[in-house]
Length: 123
Image 1 (cartoon, rainbow, N blue to C red):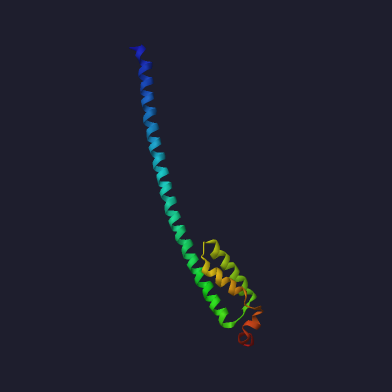
Image 2: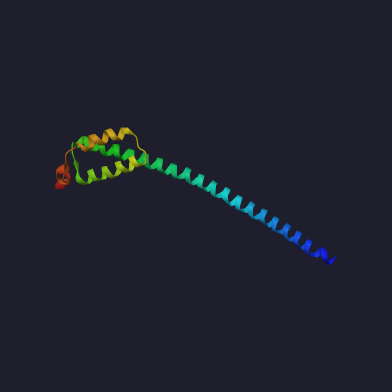
């Protein structure tokens, strides 16, 4: 009987290690599946945020363009803000409609605020 003891212990240890290895593999697989699910959810949310930001930038660019077109000129600050918004919009994958408006916006004369808004400067 004593000669079988090492064989039995070896078989028991092999069985225990096998069971633990399967449980560890299953836990790792579940963790990986959860991580992939979270990455997909993050990508969906992030994509939505990017699209929302792109819509807001497009709207603001169009509003700024319309206001500048009515005045016929823009301030230095408006020109800087337009460029920053335009590049952010473009980096988010904005389309060519704003590209055409961008070319028109850049042709407006640029001046100090007192020249662009003379009524407000006197008040």
